[in-house]
Length: 103
Image (cartoon, rainbow, N blue to C red; front, side, top):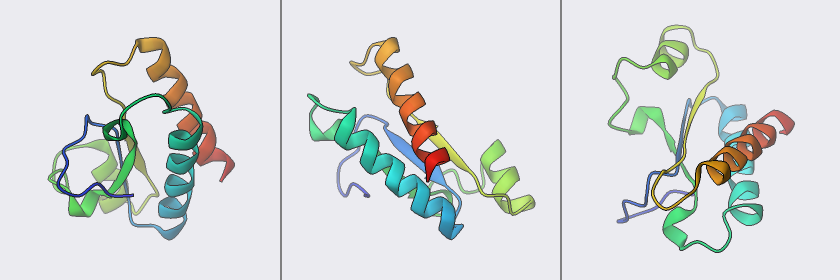
């Protein structure tokens, strides 16, 4: 679920490369896009990006401390503010967290 040649609006999940994290993030994103991100253009669909393959790979961020320094399974969920009301962003965030925990 990576978007090519399209910046999107910031709906991304950065994650460690632990196999179970990749799998649970992928399933949660599919659920979120299919059931919650409806009525929006495709640029609003969530995608996933391994942190190692992003511009944030060496940034001083908690996800990097967890995954790199401690080898802890981790992900960072980003939801846009562009054209999405706070209540909907909160629902999307809850749905993602529930989807990851249920996987």
